[in-house]
Length: 307
Image 1: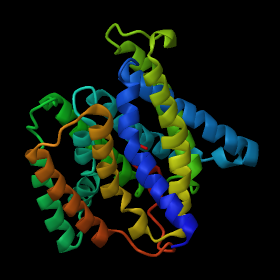
Image 2: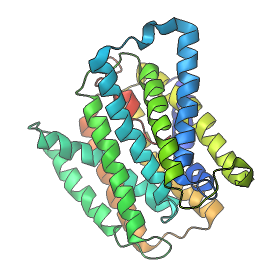
Image 3: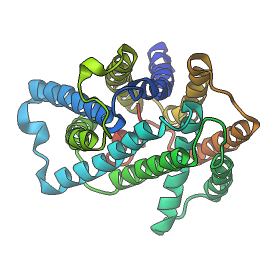
């Protein structure tokens, strides 16, 4: 691990862990689905514009099969993120990050359902991990049951998008995948968010400074800087090391929730956190190849967390 690798890894740890706080701030006065749509449309425009300037239209000649697969997986991934925007109005960010950390566990379930045979340790870790999720389904305090179920749905949608990304024809370039998915998914979410805003203002002049800064943070730091660091890590560092973000991000989110939102960690949340994060660590250790040359499945770079 070079100094550059450590910097990139901690960039992913901190930036992606802090996106839960950014989502919380953005959704305070911006209709949540609309906020997600603006975020991903902007990121899609930036990435696609950069790719067009550097490579011309060649990088976007995907063919119908690859284009369809890219859009489908993008809708699942970005739709899952939009659900997280809605859920964080009803669930503390620490709790949301823990439930969303179950994505690797859902992936094992999806693999098993298609006839694949994950290692026994992965199956055991998955079973134990869902016990931790069950501990969080009746959280009490500031969280509602509907909000918790929305986070579960968000994690499942993200897992399905990730699973299909590794099995359907996808662009060979991760930035092309992210750009196309961000643009198409974001453009769908904007009108949907406006239709479902339930009387909330669509005028940026009515949105708070904190919400606008939260949205800007998600676009610049969470999506552009964080994703760039992630792509570099995938190409240069063992995937087992890169995958540790899955159980470091919730710890960052929990800490930020305590510091900035006065969130309280109950014994139930602490117990669920211990079970889920330990299980995810076991699953990742057994499932992820450790050599950079052991390439990740097609499109899996697009399946990074909500950062």
